[in-house]
Every structure is written in C-alpha cells, then in structure tokens.
Length: 360
Image 1 (cartoon, rainbow, N blue to C red):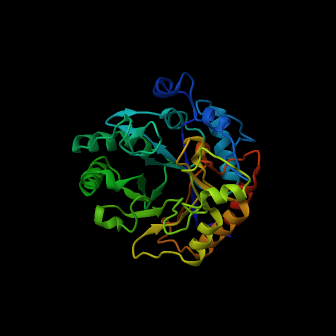
Image 2 (image 1 turned 60 degrees about the vertical axis):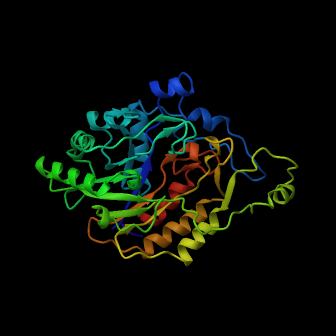
Image 3 (image 1 turned 135 degrees about the horizontal axis):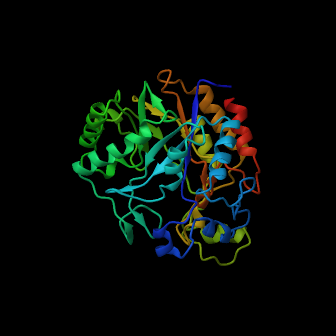
C-alpha cells in the first residue's frame, strides 16, 4: 500500500546470558525463563506467549540474528531499532549489536535507541531497588557520542538527510537534555558527520515539542493508555472476576485495558500536534511475565485489530520529507512484555502477514 514509508521495529537484544543477569536472577538467565513459566490470570488471558518459527533463540548466534532480519525484510519491515544500554561507559546486552557491526551481517538497516532508564529489580525503570543507575554529565555525553560513531559510520545505519538517527527513550530524565543535544551535535560535526537526527520517545511525558529540547522529532511510543477506561474498573474487580468464573485471585492489582479501545481512540480521536511526531503502534502488550502484580495487560489484541490500526496510519500519515517517513512498531521481540511481531504458537505469522499486506 505504501512503499514510501519506513516501518522500524523496536528490537530487544536481551536474549543471551550476561554476567549481570547471572548475578541478579540466576545462572544462564534470559527472559525466556519468565516467558516460559507464565500462566493465564483469568479466562481468555493469552499466556504464555511461546515462540514458533524462530524458537527460543540465543542472540549470540549468528544464524538467529540473520533469520530475524530475513523474516522482517520479507514482511515489510524496513529496519530494526535496537535498544542500546549505556551506564557511564558500562554497556550491557551489547553483544548482538556489537557482532552485527563486526561481522557486517545481516545486511539490514538499523538504528539505536538509548534505553536510558535505571535497571531495577521490578523492571520499571524507576528509583527503587536499583540494579544499575543512570548518571549524567557533560563528560559522559562526550564519551558516549564518540563511542556511537562506529555505529553511525556503518553503511546500514539509518539516516535522515545523511544524518544518523539516534533515539532517546526518556529525555525528561536528563538534568539538561538541551545541552546534551548540543554537545552531541558539536562532537558529530567535529567527527565529520553532517549532523545528527535526534528523536525522543513520546511516552511518559507527552506533547513536548522536540525543538525546545534540541531534538528534531518525536515518535508516539505505545502502549499509551492515557484517558482510556480500565477494562476492569477499580472497586468492581470482584464482580468482573466472578463473571469470569474466578472466585479469588492474587492478581487484583493488575491493570487491564481493551486493545480495541486503544485502536478505536487512535483512529477516531487522534491527538494532533504542531511539531514533527512520527506515528507508532503496538501489536499487543502484556507484561505479566515480568510482574507478579501490577501487570499492564491489553486484553483481546488480535492481528485484525492491529492491521486496522496500521492501515489507518499508512493511509493518513504524510511523511515530513523523503527521509522523514518512519513508523515505529513496538516491538519486534519483547516477549516478556507480550509484545512481538515474531511468530508465536497462537498466531503464527499472522501479525507479520498483516504488516506485509499493509506496507508492501
């Protein structure tokens, strides 16, 4: 339908053991462990999410990385947006992207998004029970951007007007993000780049004009449930559980929304802004694999509803320029958040097939 659009799928390079996870969660831990042991919490709850075609892969393995890229390319995805983890020079989960850079495989476009939250035991990026803490300084700004130049120089790296695209997950956590952006741009120019194209994720703080913080654009990061009613209304949860045939449940604090409500809102009542914001969407969401309570669940997501949302975006989004034509899909492989385009045992390739039907 629209070969002028570039759909970028957010990619979690987590699925391989690292020393930090060995220490915190047990030897050999990856999130496959949480994914595989998850169980349904109510009638009709789709859990566990189990991989199909690609299996329980290890991203240290070359063939797994290539298979992901080939599958994405075949189904209309234009590139991967890999999460990047940097804690004052300390990297974690860096092996897959490091190997992609070193081996020059797969031949598939990519960019980086700095997931600049604290690492916490509750997987929420907040400030309690912190495992790895983010700290900011001008010195670190310089060291960080210089480190990233090796990726920006790669011919596969995604650009806008020959400027490397770099994305920041939470700009509001910086003490002075505008100054950080200035430092990054100055260093990039000195290194011979034409500049940088900086994008902020619009998630926790919305309606921030990216130009006011020295950025070029934002993208609509989903799931975004603000303003939508909970599927289970607080105070009436026991009644709802009774309707589902559950007498007692330890999951009374979970938050459940209807996926269709989110799609309807984005199609029928889209929020417009007067700055550059790229559209985004999510195929599904359910992080109960990570959380014993306070999980966020989008109930009854389906390829049909996802396809309706994606089709609306493809038909209504007008690129800002030839290169400023991104759609961000969250995510390619966030299995522990029940959020993936990769084939699962329930839906097979249907999410990917819908993506291809709309975009190719």
